[in-house]
Length: 325
Image (cartoon, rainbow, N blue to C red):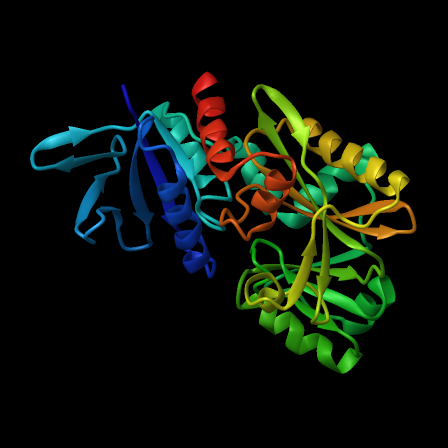
């Protein structure tokens, strides 16, 4: 008997359109002989099942069900394709866990922690995980540009603390640019993180549970045509994504072991894509994504393909792993 799978997409953040694209790829890729899939749009003003002909059916938030022509439909599993809030920050995970509905992403605590860049980095530092020197600001804090530059130096990166797809990120080269970059980041979030610039090879490492085992996928090297791996570089073709990355054997061993260690320290489930920058042979953690892009061109699916895992296998395995728990 086919499993009913809700594919949640959309969300409340600037990543809305990217999420819709990811969710539709999951919908078109999953094996229709095994799964009956439903595209559920989670939006600020409505939660709806969007049928192929764009007919909308409201979601009953009491039990996450839908009714079609008087017939109630519930779901065996939820495939989470929401980048950003509320799918990547723990809110949807907590909701589904309260309803006892299996879902493909990590747990509520892990999602909330990894979505908060500064809290995640602070949690991992005692384990010896290397990170860039950083300075934190909350909206309304006094801004002392001299103190910031004294701690992190120039150039530096100013980032929204809880945002993805490089929204709210600026590379600051001169002191005069710092305030504008801070204000830009505060447009995305009320917390920001300012980090020292690390000059080295940037890589992305995917870790997943596949057929019951935690595996590290082939590493991707990021070569941006812009100053850094920003929105244009990620989604508008302004970068090279080289899989497998051009690393030395020592670098590859170090970053693969570190990515797996982080996954296990945090007791992750589902997908994880961690970003690192090398200083010589040492990888420095930048951030962790728990709902990465899911199109064929996205980094984690590229890595899975390099490991001999098709999109259909990647997505169906996520569902089967969720149904085990």
